[in-house]
Length: 258
Image (tube, rainbow, N blue to C red; front, side, top):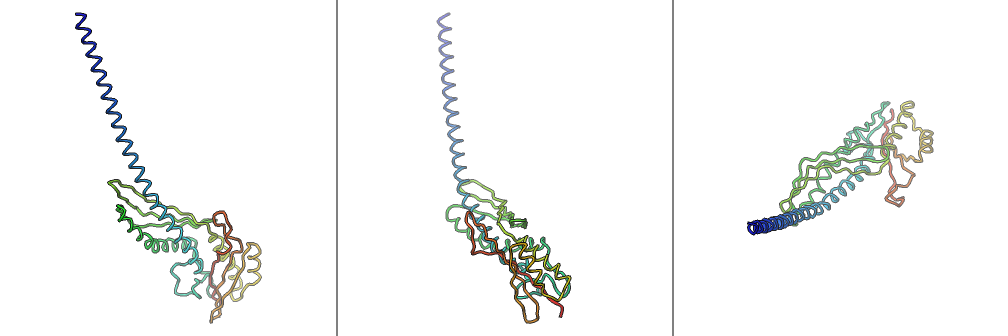
Protein backbone atom coordinates (compact mmCIF):
# COMPACT_ATOMS: atom_id res chain seq x y z
CA UNK A 1 0.00 0.00 0.00
CA UNK A 2 2.76 2.34 0.93
CA UNK A 3 4.55 1.41 -2.31
CA UNK A 4 1.45 2.35 -4.33
CA UNK A 5 1.27 5.71 -2.55
CA UNK A 6 4.90 6.29 -3.36
CA UNK A 7 4.26 5.53 -7.00
CA UNK A 8 1.27 7.89 -7.06
CA UNK A 9 3.34 10.59 -5.42
CA UNK A 10 6.09 10.18 -7.99
CA UNK A 11 3.49 10.24 -10.77
CA UNK A 12 1.89 13.43 -9.44
CA UNK A 13 5.27 15.10 -9.07
CA UNK A 14 6.11 14.12 -12.64
CA UNK A 15 2.80 15.49 -13.92
CA UNK A 16 3.35 18.70 -11.98
CA UNK A 17 6.84 19.01 -13.43
CA UNK A 18 5.53 18.49 -16.97
CA UNK A 19 2.72 21.00 -16.42
CA UNK A 20 5.07 23.63 -15.01
CA UNK A 21 7.64 23.05 -17.74
CA UNK A 22 4.94 23.19 -20.43
CA UNK A 23 3.50 26.33 -18.88
CA UNK A 24 6.91 27.98 -18.79
CA UNK A 25 7.53 27.04 -22.41
CA UNK A 26 4.07 28.33 -23.40
CA UNK A 27 4.53 31.60 -21.50
CA UNK A 28 8.01 31.98 -22.95
CA UNK A 29 6.70 31.38 -26.49
CA UNK A 30 3.83 33.81 -25.86
CA UNK A 31 6.24 36.42 -24.51
CA UNK A 32 8.44 35.92 -27.58
CA UNK A 33 5.46 36.49 -29.87
CA UNK A 34 4.38 39.58 -27.94
CA UNK A 35 7.93 40.92 -27.95
CA UNK A 36 8.15 40.32 -31.68
CA UNK A 37 4.83 42.09 -32.24
CA UNK A 38 5.99 45.01 -30.09
CA UNK A 39 9.27 45.20 -31.99
CA UNK A 40 7.44 45.12 -35.32
CA UNK A 41 4.99 47.78 -34.10
CA UNK A 42 7.82 49.98 -32.84
CA UNK A 43 9.68 49.53 -36.11
CA UNK A 44 6.58 50.51 -38.08
CA UNK A 45 6.00 53.49 -35.77
CA UNK A 46 9.60 54.61 -36.25
CA UNK A 47 9.15 54.33 -40.01
CA UNK A 48 6.30 56.89 -40.00
CA UNK A 49 8.31 59.44 -37.98
CA UNK A 50 9.98 60.75 -41.18
CA UNK A 51 6.51 61.18 -42.70
CA UNK A 52 5.41 63.36 -39.78
CA UNK A 53 8.66 65.32 -39.93
CA UNK A 54 8.25 65.79 -43.68
CA UNK A 55 4.72 67.17 -43.28
CA UNK A 56 5.75 69.39 -40.33
CA UNK A 57 8.53 70.82 -42.48
CA UNK A 58 6.13 71.40 -45.37
CA UNK A 59 3.76 73.30 -43.10
CA UNK A 60 6.66 75.36 -41.73
CA UNK A 61 7.99 76.37 -45.16
CA UNK A 62 4.54 77.13 -46.58
CA UNK A 63 3.58 78.98 -43.40
CA UNK A 64 6.68 81.19 -43.57
CA UNK A 65 5.97 81.97 -47.23
CA UNK A 66 2.33 82.66 -46.40
CA UNK A 67 3.20 85.06 -43.59
CA UNK A 68 5.57 86.95 -45.90
CA UNK A 69 3.25 87.11 -48.92
CA UNK A 70 0.12 87.99 -47.00
CA UNK A 71 1.98 90.64 -44.99
CA UNK A 72 3.14 92.21 -48.25
CA UNK A 73 -0.44 92.35 -49.51
CA UNK A 74 -2.01 94.04 -46.51
CA UNK A 75 -3.29 90.88 -44.85
CA UNK A 76 -4.78 89.30 -47.95
CA UNK A 77 -4.00 86.09 -49.83
CA UNK A 78 -6.51 86.94 -52.54
CA UNK A 79 -6.20 90.65 -53.14
CA UNK A 80 -9.37 92.73 -53.29
CA UNK A 81 -10.09 94.26 -56.68
CA UNK A 82 -9.23 97.69 -55.29
CA UNK A 83 -5.58 97.70 -54.28
CA UNK A 84 -2.42 99.71 -54.81
CA UNK A 85 0.67 97.95 -56.13
CA UNK A 86 -0.59 94.63 -54.72
CA UNK A 87 -1.36 96.02 -51.26
CA UNK A 88 -4.88 96.06 -49.86
CA UNK A 89 -6.41 99.30 -48.59
CA UNK A 90 -6.56 100.00 -44.87
CA UNK A 91 -7.98 103.46 -45.42
CA UNK A 92 -9.94 104.59 -48.47
CA UNK A 93 -11.58 107.94 -49.18
CA UNK A 94 -12.20 108.88 -45.57
CA UNK A 95 -13.09 105.41 -44.28
CA UNK A 96 -11.16 102.72 -42.41
CA UNK A 97 -11.46 99.52 -44.46
CA UNK A 98 -8.74 97.36 -42.91
CA UNK A 99 -9.33 93.62 -42.60
CA UNK A 100 -9.85 92.14 -39.16
CA UNK A 101 -7.34 89.79 -37.56
CA UNK A 102 -9.91 87.01 -38.10
CA UNK A 103 -9.97 87.77 -41.82
CA UNK A 104 -6.17 87.53 -42.00
CA UNK A 105 -6.27 84.20 -40.15
CA UNK A 106 -8.77 82.89 -42.70
CA UNK A 107 -6.56 84.12 -45.55
CA UNK A 108 -3.60 82.29 -43.98
CA UNK A 109 -5.61 79.08 -43.69
CA UNK A 110 -6.69 79.28 -47.33
CA UNK A 111 -3.10 79.85 -48.41
CA UNK A 112 -1.97 76.81 -46.41
CA UNK A 113 -4.70 74.54 -47.78
CA UNK A 114 -4.02 75.43 -51.40
CA UNK A 115 -0.24 75.18 -51.19
CA UNK A 116 0.19 72.26 -48.80
CA UNK A 117 -1.44 69.91 -51.30
CA UNK A 118 1.51 70.34 -53.69
CA UNK A 119 3.83 69.23 -50.91
CA UNK A 120 1.68 66.24 -49.98
CA UNK A 121 1.76 65.04 -53.58
CA UNK A 122 5.44 64.23 -53.07
CA UNK A 123 4.49 61.47 -50.63
CA UNK A 124 3.63 59.29 -53.61
CA UNK A 125 7.29 58.21 -53.83
CA UNK A 126 6.81 56.25 -50.57
CA UNK A 127 4.62 53.74 -52.40
CA UNK A 128 7.80 52.21 -53.77
CA UNK A 129 8.86 51.54 -50.16
CA UNK A 130 5.73 49.60 -49.30
CA UNK A 131 3.64 52.41 -47.86
CA UNK A 132 -0.02 52.93 -48.72
CA UNK A 133 -1.04 56.45 -47.69
CA UNK A 134 -4.60 57.73 -47.71
CA UNK A 135 -5.29 61.39 -46.97
CA UNK A 136 -8.75 62.67 -46.06
CA UNK A 137 -10.05 66.21 -46.27
CA UNK A 138 -7.51 68.85 -45.31
CA UNK A 139 -8.65 71.40 -42.72
CA UNK A 140 -6.47 74.22 -41.40
CA UNK A 141 -7.00 76.64 -38.54
CA UNK A 142 -4.62 79.58 -38.14
CA UNK A 143 -4.11 81.55 -34.94
CA UNK A 144 -2.16 84.81 -35.09
CA UNK A 145 -0.75 85.27 -31.59
CA UNK A 146 1.40 87.88 -29.88
CA UNK A 147 4.82 86.49 -30.88
CA UNK A 148 4.01 83.76 -33.38
CA UNK A 149 1.55 82.19 -35.79
CA UNK A 150 0.11 78.74 -35.05
CA UNK A 151 -0.98 76.54 -37.93
CA UNK A 152 -3.23 73.62 -36.93
CA UNK A 153 -3.65 71.23 -39.86
CA UNK A 154 -5.89 68.16 -39.78
CA UNK A 155 -5.15 65.65 -42.56
CA UNK A 156 -6.94 62.50 -41.32
CA UNK A 157 -4.04 60.48 -42.75
CA UNK A 158 -4.03 56.67 -42.69
CA UNK A 159 -0.70 54.90 -43.30
CA UNK A 160 -0.60 51.19 -44.10
CA UNK A 161 2.55 49.07 -44.20
CA UNK A 162 3.18 45.37 -43.62
CA UNK A 163 -0.40 44.87 -42.48
CA UNK A 164 -0.14 47.54 -39.77
CA UNK A 165 -2.24 50.72 -39.75
CA UNK A 166 -1.21 54.07 -38.30
CA UNK A 167 -3.13 57.32 -38.16
CA UNK A 168 -1.73 60.85 -38.31
CA UNK A 169 -4.25 63.62 -37.85
CA UNK A 170 -3.16 66.74 -36.02
CA UNK A 171 -0.11 68.68 -37.17
CA UNK A 172 0.58 71.82 -35.11
CA UNK A 173 3.39 74.08 -36.27
CA UNK A 174 4.40 77.34 -34.57
CA UNK A 175 6.26 79.99 -36.55
CA UNK A 176 7.77 83.00 -34.74
CA UNK A 177 6.35 86.18 -36.26
CA UNK A 178 5.54 89.78 -35.34
CA UNK A 179 2.64 89.89 -37.76
CA UNK A 180 0.11 90.78 -35.07
CA UNK A 181 2.26 93.63 -33.79
CA UNK A 182 2.71 95.09 -37.26
CA UNK A 183 -0.97 94.73 -38.07
CA UNK A 184 -1.77 96.68 -34.90
CA UNK A 185 0.80 99.37 -35.79
CA UNK A 186 -0.85 99.71 -39.20
CA UNK A 187 -4.22 100.14 -37.54
CA UNK A 188 -2.73 102.72 -35.16
CA UNK A 189 -1.55 104.79 -38.12
CA UNK A 190 -4.88 104.68 -39.96
CA UNK A 191 -6.64 105.77 -36.76
CA UNK A 192 -4.53 108.93 -36.93
CA UNK A 193 -5.19 109.11 -40.65
CA UNK A 194 -8.93 109.15 -39.98
CA UNK A 195 -8.46 112.43 -38.11
CA UNK A 196 -6.72 114.03 -41.13
CA UNK A 197 -7.96 112.09 -44.18
CA UNK A 198 -5.98 113.92 -46.86
CA UNK A 199 -2.50 114.26 -45.36
CA UNK A 200 0.53 112.00 -45.11
CA UNK A 201 1.26 112.10 -41.39
CA UNK A 202 5.03 112.13 -41.17
CA UNK A 203 5.08 113.09 -37.50
CA UNK A 204 2.88 110.11 -36.65
CA UNK A 205 5.16 107.76 -38.56
CA UNK A 206 8.17 109.09 -36.66
CA UNK A 207 6.30 108.69 -33.36
CA UNK A 208 5.27 105.09 -34.09
CA UNK A 209 8.77 104.30 -35.36
CA UNK A 210 10.56 105.54 -32.25
CA UNK A 211 8.18 103.79 -29.87
CA UNK A 212 8.34 100.42 -31.66
CA UNK A 213 11.79 100.33 -33.33
CA UNK A 214 10.36 100.32 -36.85
CA UNK A 215 10.75 102.48 -39.93
CA UNK A 216 8.33 103.48 -42.68
CA UNK A 217 8.86 103.57 -46.42
CA UNK A 218 6.28 104.94 -48.88
CA UNK A 219 5.35 104.17 -52.48
CA UNK A 220 2.98 106.49 -54.36
CA UNK A 221 0.90 105.53 -57.40
CA UNK A 222 -0.27 107.67 -60.33
CA UNK A 223 -3.46 108.71 -58.55
CA UNK A 224 -1.79 109.89 -55.35
CA UNK A 225 -2.63 106.86 -53.26
CA UNK A 226 0.21 105.59 -51.08
CA UNK A 227 1.49 102.19 -50.00
CA UNK A 228 2.96 102.27 -46.49
CA UNK A 229 5.62 99.71 -45.66
CA UNK A 230 6.40 99.23 -41.95
CA UNK A 231 9.84 97.64 -41.58
CA UNK A 232 11.09 95.84 -38.48
CA UNK A 233 14.46 97.04 -37.19
CA UNK A 234 14.86 94.17 -34.75
CA UNK A 235 16.85 91.08 -35.85
CA UNK A 236 14.85 87.91 -36.31
CA UNK A 237 15.81 85.13 -33.91
CA UNK A 238 16.47 82.01 -35.97
CA UNK A 239 17.37 79.06 -33.74
CA UNK A 240 20.32 80.27 -31.68
CA UNK A 241 21.55 82.88 -34.14
CA UNK A 242 20.29 86.30 -35.04
CA UNK A 243 19.30 86.46 -38.67
CA UNK A 244 19.67 90.00 -40.02
CA UNK A 245 18.93 89.08 -43.63
CA UNK A 246 15.24 88.25 -43.24
CA UNK A 247 13.76 91.52 -42.07
CA UNK A 248 10.00 91.52 -41.60
CA UNK A 249 7.71 94.18 -43.04
CA UNK A 250 3.99 94.81 -43.46
CA UNK A 251 2.44 96.79 -46.34
CA UNK A 252 -0.94 98.50 -46.56
CA UNK A 253 -2.47 101.15 -48.80
CA UNK A 254 -4.13 104.47 -48.10
CA UNK A 255 -6.47 106.10 -50.64
CA UNK A 256 -6.66 109.85 -50.16
CA UNK A 257 -9.56 112.15 -50.90
CA UNK A 258 -9.16 113.69 -54.32
